[in-house]
Amino acid sequence: MHGTLVLNADAQPVSIVPLSTVDWHDAVRIIYLGRAVVMEEYDLWVVRSPSVQMRMPSVIMLKEYQQHNGKVEFSRYNVILRDNYTCQYCKNKFPFKELTFDHVKPRRDGGKTEWDNIVAACYPCNQKKAHYAKMKPKKAPKQPSYWELAEVRKRRPITVPNAFWEQYLGWKSEVLIDESVVLKNSVEVLDENLPFF
Ligand SMILES: [Zn+2]
Figure 1 (tube, protein in one colour):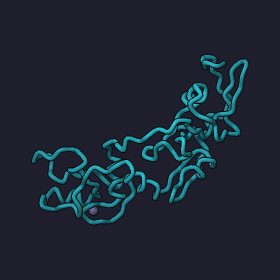
Figure 2 (cartoon, protein in one colour):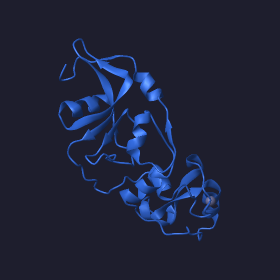
Figure 3 (cartoon, helix red, strand yellow):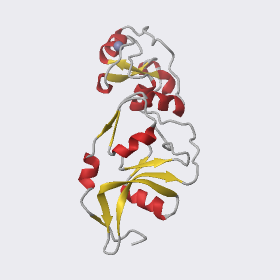
Figure 4 (cartoon, helix red, strand yellow):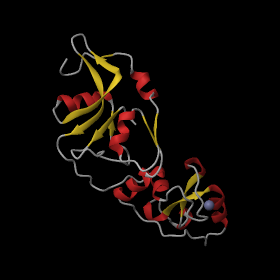
């Protein structure tokens, strides 16, 4: 996660999964190009050149609405999110690192690594299934939409670098603030290559 949250023209994040953020170079570029307005700034994070200084934007809002294409990347994280951190065999919930990818139709039988053949499984169930190939997940897996994943994501805690973000996130679970991202960068950043300096 980068230091600047990017909102769509409707003041909602452009994306929840993954959260739409950009690093300070991109934030400055987008503002410079006139594509977004600054909603919030960091107090301690200053970008400075010999002639100009600016406070880093913490939240920016695009002027033009960007439609989401509804697609999600196939990844271990997104599979576990789709399955809501729940082993699809024993139906217990687990922390991320205690869950693994499970091929419903085993790889040795030609099972592919794709949305409709992969489920989240705890390690004991994954092992057990290796010996009893007939074990089936409680529900057949399928590719989720972006909106389905975003709904699940909002119901899990998130850690963000700036307290201003919370009011824009529309989160349904805990929003934790960890300013270490900012503190690391709070020294003055000197960059003479920025177009407007
Ligand atoms: Zn299990």
